[in-house]
Each structure stands twice: as C-alpha cells, then as structure tokens.
Image 1 (cartoon, rainbow, N blue to C red):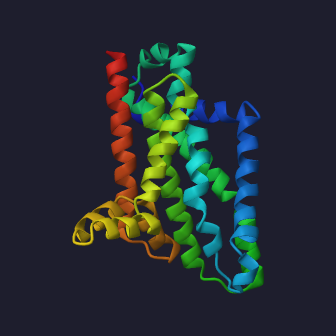
Image 2 (tube, rainbow, N blue to C red; image 1 turned 90 degrees about the horizontal axis):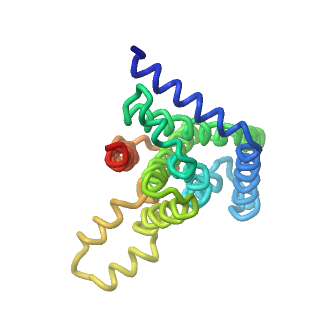
Length: 249
C-alpha cells in the first residue's frame, strides 16, 4: 500500500504538471512579473524614494495576489467537478486529505516559483545600494505565506462549485474582506461610528492580512503573524475537506 507521503507527491506532480502543459502558466508568470515591476518602479516610486529597500515592492503584494492567486486556484476542484473526474479522483486509493494537500502544495509551489522569478528586483536594489537582506528575506517569507492563505481560501471556494468564474469571484470577495478589515479608511470609519468600542476596531483589524503582513515588510518574523496566516490556510483547507467528504459520501 502506498504511503501517505508518496500519494501526496503523486498528486502534487500531477497537478504541477498540468499547469505547465498549457501556456496559461507562462502567461500568468509573465503577467505577475510585469505587474510587480510596474507597481514597484512606476507606481511605488522606487527611484524617488532614494533608499535601498523593497518597501514599494512588497507594498502591493496583497492587492496583486487578490486577483492573481484566485486565478491560479479557481480550477483546483471546480474543474474536477466540471469534467466529471472528481469521482475518479476520490475513488483512487488515496484519502481526501492527501488529495487536498497535494493539490494545494502544487499550486503553492507554482506561486512560489513566480515569486522566486522576481529576483532581478533584489539584484537591482543590491546594485543601487546596500539593503538589509534580512528585511528582504522576511518580506519574501511573508509574501509566500500571504499567497498560501489566499490560495487556501480559493481552494475552499473551488470545492463549493463546478463553475470556475463563481469560484474566482467568491475567493476575491473573501480575500478583499481580509484586506479591508485593517485598511486605514475602514478602521477610521469604524472608530467614528463606534467611538467607545475600540475593542471592536481592534478585533476587526486582527483579521486583516494587511495588519499581519506589515510586520514582515519591516523585517520582523513575529510568531503571531505566522500563526495568523497558517490558521487561515488550515481553516480553509479543513473546510475544503468537509465539503469534499460530503461529495464523496
């Protein structure tokens, strides 16, 4: 009998290979690199800042991932249901959890590859000055965790429908909520509406990816921030498992 790890790796290789079997993966990577470059150097004012840092680079990641990550993950389970291969997959000698983890790791690895290909930005800032590489490393760790959290949410929405467009919209709305929960205009509005309920504003802000991603941008690896992103991913994948087990039953 196959070991759980071997089953997960088999699903991961199968899913990762499906990305590169069509030009969609390459188009996504090119679009991601172009957008990160545009927002870093043109919108973020990289040159105008006059400092050797990637603040303008990581600043836009929550917003870029808002659309790009759901575009990558919307097909994970929706396509299986649409093509009728869901039953075949779930009747294979693997558990539901092995299939979920395998698919998630494949998509996360693909996003990690896209993020890794932004290394010319790091080379540029190293050429122009002497940046703190520890801060840059923390930024990349936070960006990868952020992408994983968005992807887990998309995995959950994809399991709920066979329509990829619906999955995309649902995941964008969910991720947008996690951004706006700690966005200054929103927190300021809540403070004005509920001036005596500061605990409410703090609670809402605690669910924001912006609040927890800021620490990584400053070069701080806070365990609470790591736990936050892991918790979002774990809860979303758990919900995915519940939905798929109902389909399997």
